[in-house]
Image 1 (cartoon, rainbow, N blue to C red):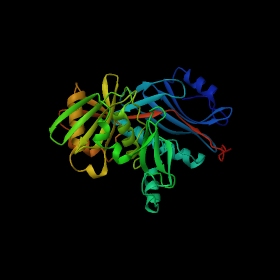
Image 2 (image 1 turned 90 degrees about the vertical axis):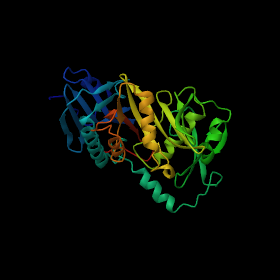
Image 3 (image 1 turned 135 degrees about the vertical axis):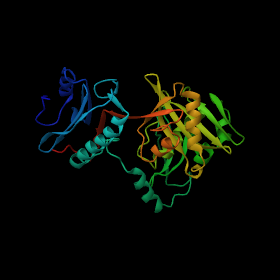
Image 4 (image 1 turned 30 degrees about the vertical axis):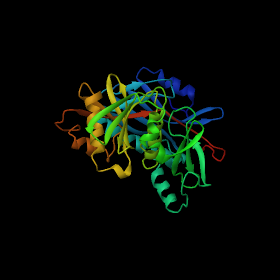
Length: 349
């Protein structure tokens, strides 16, 4: 495909030119926000049945891959910089690997990661720091207020400035210890969840959230998203406005959760997480099975960005390449991502 390539980095006008070309169905840019606009360092191009990834290297623009798709992707566009293209089935696994290769190429030259194209490895970094950190609780002098890992307006967390360990959240102007946040007593005090889903066990049940209005259920899920995000770079931000959720309560304690949203009439499983000391007790399986029974009416659902740790679970349930009652289709989105330079960084020439 013969497309116009700039001599250096691309800009917004160049993206507009690409988007208007007849042979290009969608552009997905990776860019750096500069004082006078944006500097495009890579673009994924959706062209009929092909996906092509190009990036700017020191010696000019390079083609990373040209991959022939086997299924139609799902396209969602807010604007030119925020396009999302979700690939399904066998394409999902291939595109996931290609996106990571693109991230590695950009990190090699630009010395910055474009998450999720390049994995941050923050879980390993945090774990190394925590082995040598003396922080002990939410009242420790090293604990400070930082923004929360969710789209909840003005949400905040309390973390150690040295190792970033999560100790609590802010709620109505107060610091709430994480152990209290994960307790059912705090969840139900002056708060009414959207619904309770019984699972036939005396010590366990599920709390449903439709995401609005923001109440304690949504704050517990947001805190658990941050808790899980500390150990896995695959965790996305929790967006209550878009996501529904089920919070698993066992022995009066929040043990895990699942979040999802609907895409073209099909439910998309966004996140599945079980806290460490509740694992290997069948909670993940019970969450998925109950969620399928209650919310997957057609027996088919998407799994957003599955990984090597989660796939065995869905295979065990017979949902991937099996004969289970439900079919799980892998889904992997690539999206436009912009990085901002801080005061210590400059663009490579």
